[in-house]
Amino acid sequence: MSPAGFVLRNAMRNKRRLTLTVLSVALSLFLFTMLQTALREMSAPVETEDSALRVITRHRVSLANVLPVRYENRIRQVQGVEAVSKFTWFGGIYQDERNFFPQFAVDPDVIFRIFTEANVDPLQMKAFQSERNAAVVGIKTMERFGWKLGDRITLKGTIWDCNPELVIRAVYRGGIDETNLMFHHDYFDELMGRLGLVGTFWIKVRSPDDVQPVIEAIDRSFRNTEAETKTETERAFQLGFISMFGNIRMLIGSISTVIVFTMILVTASTMSMAIRERMREIAVLKAMGFNGLHVVALILAESFGLALTGGLIGCVGAWLLFSNVDIYKLSQGFFIKFEVTPHMLASGLLLAGLLGVISSLAPAWAAIRMPVVTGLKELD
Amino acid sequence: MLAVIAIVQIRELTRIYQQGDIKVVALDRVSLDIARGDFVALMGPSGSGKSTLLHIIAGIDRPTAGSCRVDGIEVAALSETELAGWRNSHIGFVFQTFNLIPVLTAFENVEMPLLLTGLSAAERRAHVEAAFELVGLADRMDHLPRQLSGGQEQRVAIARALVTDPTLIVADEPTGNLDAKSASDVLGLLEALNRDAGKTIIMVTHDPKAAAHARRTLHLEKGELLKDEEVRR
Image 1: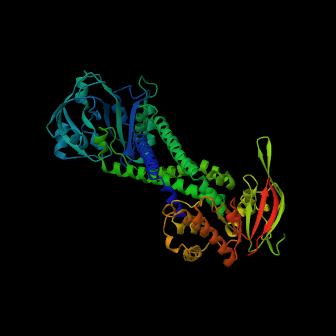
Image 2 (image 1 turned 90 degrees about the vertical axis):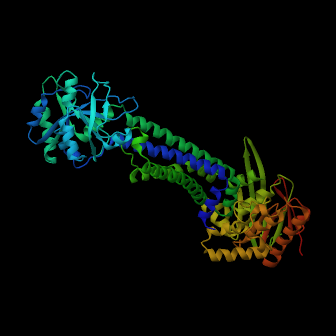
Image 3 (image 1 turned 90 degrees about the horizontal axis):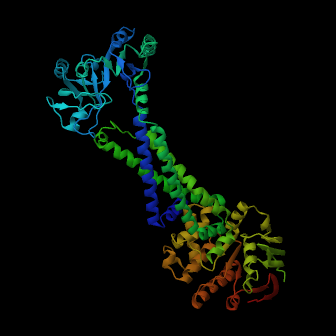
């Protein structure tokens, strides 16, 4: 028998308690991994080679404020700008409030020169561009609602006082987000009575070196006007957009802290019970010649093993589950992808290991301090 | 009487416990020698200090004053870590309630003290099998403690005490939880280990019949050594 074998036998002596504790840790680590993944997906949008060339101009005050449509021409004239499209969040309801998906009014002739990752069949593209109330829809949303080309849908406006009646003429695939619906900004403007307002401008610059000069030039151009602008990279814009949901990082961080604290209590309680029941055996081991370090090592190994087993089940379980489910459907379009990264797996397992160490401290200290004679007297 | 070659030398040994405001004198200036190869029974009523004396000799308790040398080593002068190592190589314990680890087989229980010795698995197996041969339980090595009778459990505990070939075997009421037949077997085994293998044994007991198996009986009362009866066989 090896010391590891002895630790294993000790851990297995109360199978029901072992199972419940491992499952508690596993469930907690599963939730922790899920929350961290959600936080990452929401707060760290992926930056691709194409997206690195995109910048967004919005009202300096907030996203809720709009810009005059006439800014488009001045932006187009800024050196380094390759393409500009109006890009207004419509935020309408399709049949039911639960059927959320992003909808935008855009310039049909330009938008796919900016979103170059998205692929559209040339014939469909032509149909989308030539029909006043045509829409192009990402493949995920098409599949979600079982739509096909030629289908007619109506969006009920919530932010804007109009209800666009659209006909689906094109489907796009590729890019980070395959869930958007886009329709003609002219049609939107017509429905709104030609107010000449735009939510944001999406801009493609010629090269990475042009990004910062373009940002500075645009904002400088509209300084001291009635609608000053804030221009930023796509990544910065998305992070700002997420912050509109509130302090999600703090919320998720708080929940994660509660989970970790609960885990520590559960595991520490289990280890304390397990060691208290075994105090007489520990006294006998010490009488046989096991010193404080040996006893700590045995308790630490048991606690660490228990927590790590739970951690492996929880973290790997989360990774397997989220690798195999359609998170877009499951979250009703809220999450496009939900990737448990190796870094997150490692963080979860590290947390489990730390949990095992922390949980063993109190029982190990009690076991070291217990005089052998006291332990033997407890026995008799 | 002073032994010719004393393996245990105790001088003016005192142990006082503090219980709240009260001082309890468990041992009061006890002096004695125990010879190598002796089999000593410590007798006395409850609270007489016999278990305390055994614990100090075995290095699991420390005296308040006085000296306790085992094989030339002043036990109380060792640090806790040194003492643990010393116990592993010099002391074999036999307890009243056997104290076998329930989740380990008899073989694994006996092997436990050897895990600290640095012996290979094959060497440990050889030592354990030899210990089982000595206690006559070679056919029960793979049994769990709950599958053994009380007498068999105590013989496994004796095998565990023997397996490191210690300087001393200390037994605290080794027959206290056994029926008469099993008690007789265990005492016979201890006697044989002393007689045939030359093991030095110190045994605490209430039972005069058990003490009769020892070569020498020491009586303690209120922490003092009363008389020293020597029984030579």
